[in-house]
Amino acid sequence: MLHPITAIEIIFSVVFVLIIFGVALFLPRKIRKSGLIIVSSITVLLLLSFAIRPYWINYQVSRKTEQLNHYLEEKYPNQEWEISRQEGRQYNPYHLQVRFKNEEGWIYIYSVVNEKKIHQSVWVPSGGNSFEEGKHYEK
Image 1 (cartoon, rainbow, N blue to C red):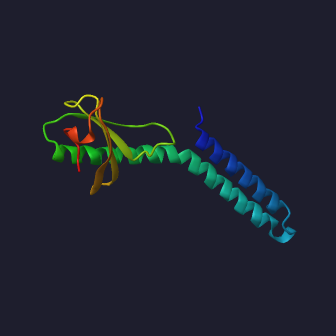
Image 2: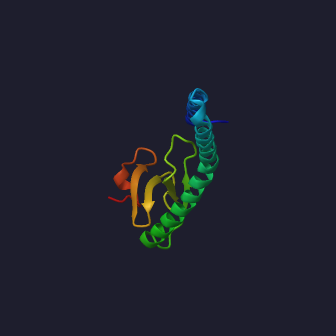
């Protein structure tokens, strides 16, 4: 099913393309052909951006997952964890969730900019615990 954010982007893109096509049709005869070529090029670029975006994000997420995995291996050797991310357009795809095997119920969310800029941004403690009680809480 189409996410509402994606639907809104598509609707605005279609309206934008229709408006500029309409403007191009009313251009003087001398530049109408050039205007239609430009509008057609913009349409193709919009379609390509919608088609390529999901693959680009998946590629970036896989790279950032590897970077986070390497960071965790250095920071917490001999421990096991599971890395995932929240699905959906409303979530930042570069905020990755980490669940450590030796700390049930806790979720740590790491923001991964690049291999040198990784930090915990959110902690979800289990039960009524304070985030400072987490074994993997990073100040």
